[in-house]
Length: 160
Image (cartoon, rainbow, N blue to C red; front, side):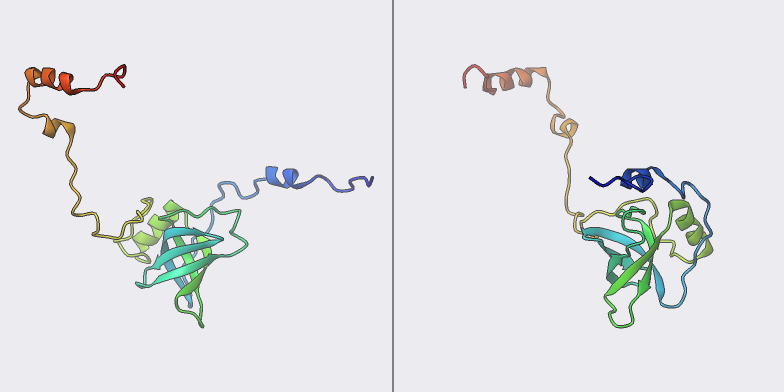
C-alpha cells in the first residue's frame, strides 16, 4: 500500500478560509460588461438575470466563482457580454450588498434596483387580483350563540 506523501487531502484545503471578510476594491463595469440582478437560479452553474440595460439573459457562472462564491436570487452581479450571443452572458463577479448600495449611490445601478430583496417567481402584476380574507373579517357580527350551533355540525373523532 503506498504511503501518503502530501500534506493532507481536501479536508485540509477546505479548512482554509483565505479571503475571509477582506475589504476589496469596488469594481466598475468596462466595455462588454453590464450590471445585472439574478432572477432565478437554474442549476448546473447557470442563472437567469435581468441586465440593467433591459435585457433578460441566461448567465453562466464561471468556474472560479462556482463553489467559492454563492450566488442567490436577487443578488447584483457583473456579467461579461458575449459578442456572438446576445441572450447569454458570463458571471464575472458578485457584489456584496454594501458594494451594491455604493454602486447605486454612484449612479451605476438605477434607483429602481432592489438590493437585499429576493424577487419571486411570479411575474410582475400577476398576483394583483388575489385577495385574502382573515378570520376576523369572516367572524364579524357573530356572537357566542352561533358558535354553539357550529359545535353540533362538527364531526367527532370517535364517530369516524
